Length: 390
Image (cartoon, rainbow, N blue to C red; front, side, top):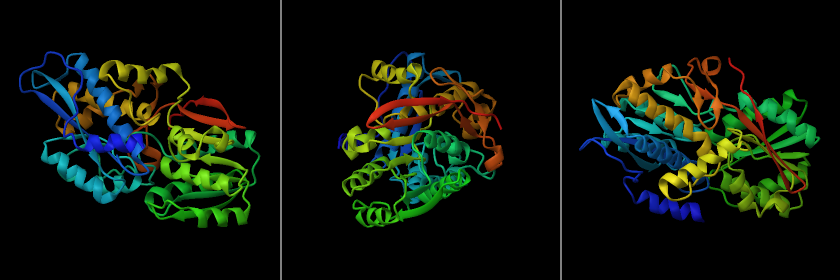
């Protein structure tokens, strides 16, 4: 698998280079990039790293980041947190040992649970992308959130999917940890609110053979199967095994980006056939797609991580902008500067600070998002949806 080979090489490098210009001697700003960079969720962690790389390259092209009267080069230090709480906690400590106070990531709910108290002790700003019910908490004011969870968008996705794929029942599949249960349970409530009967199936993270779950699903005969927050690699295998077992209904995904990887692992559009999904940002927008061209121009290679790179990029860009405003990489000063910034991105557009209603702290980026549809093996694209301020 290309991503996994890349991840192996990535983990062997302590610091990744970015575009160069004239910088003050011995002035370097290191930022961390954290997430699962191996295993079934590798696409999400590699996307975090690619987003951090691009933001660093853009800053360096503009002359670097101003700190303490100097112009500093930005470099990225990746850490594979393996989608576990222990991995994220260890990553926070490992990055702190390198005097790194700013982290783009981690990704999943287990990682968010693990990093919050440790990053607080280490005085690190971190941006998690988890859909956990407690992804943010007022007692951890240095934690920021890359995008809202399904409580904010599941209803819109389900209503659009019902227009294309009539459904009266759905079976949800997700891992049996916080990264699965928090999301699938919220998805289930959203389906029920739309008059759809739901059942939930959970599996041990790391499972590769989903035959027992597929057998139970086929026996229950749901109209739709939703892979919820299953990592893209897992979801692709689930789709493949469902289709091989004879399931002909639509398949949904109310749990995060990764459609390109699901298509690849499952065997292509002809296998996936009927599919609907949530995208963190409107990926059909040419300005959003131009991010990949910018990455290749500045770094001389393609980004790794699919559309998740685009969704993670604003957090990385805003963090470096906050450093320039604060004039330091001190976490508390950077967090204070972040809170003053408008939510806007040159590629994605304008959004809002949210999270106060759900978490009690308004440190969540709410940008336009997308709803994707594949019908009869044809990708109909991703429809843009505007966020509503709280």
